Amino acid sequence: MLDSDQIREFAERGYVVVPGAIAEDLVAAATRVIDELVDDAPPDPTTQGPHFYFPDSADVPALLGLLTESTAWAGVESLIGAGKVDVPPQVQVALNIPPFSHRPGMHHIDGYPPDADGRPHTFTLLAGVLMSDQLTEDGGNLWVWPGTHRTHAEYFTEHGPDAFFSAAGYPPIELPEPEQITGRAGDLLLAHYLLGHNIGGNVSDHTRRAVYFRVKRTGHGPQWREFLTDPWLDYELP
Ligand SMILES: [Fe+2]
Image (cartoon, rainbow, N blue to C red):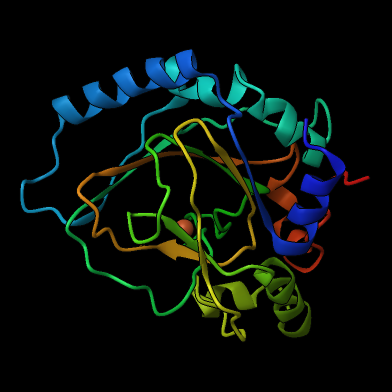
């Protein structure tokens, strides 16, 4: 469960970090699965920066358990509504391998390009589990642009939801100063789908690890246009 301050923070800033939401034993079990994924298909030794794995949830129950067996699920339900959340069919394991002296110039939103049927890959919120400590900046942290979930909704209200396609992931909005997500392994990031974000650089000594779930409220799919202009359509905030 999120408390009222955390819910207010999510509503105003588009994201919240919940310290220690995932118990150590769940983090340890998931870490072993990530180790196996990396051992089975190691990144090329020249890789710098992002490297991803996208297993099906059914194949990696210990990764899915970070979301469904921890307090993260109640946290998600306290935003979207109890019993209203679909279990995501896929998991993203996101590595950020140093040295990667990158500083993103701008944000993006996910979901472009669309499927063959024309539907973009929108969702309700991103649930991210930090799988390595990221206590300082420029250690592979995710960058976010606070409040841009509201600015993006204003953009799509003004230009219509089909402006999603011409924007191609980069709606031309005015950006505030970015922030880098910091925290410890086992901390939970909840971020609105419309929050602008991007991959940061990593000048630390360690590969950054995170696990991301793209979470949908049940019934999100056919309502994506309405959701882009009404960012609380999928939510039951108090
Ligand atoms: Fe993204």
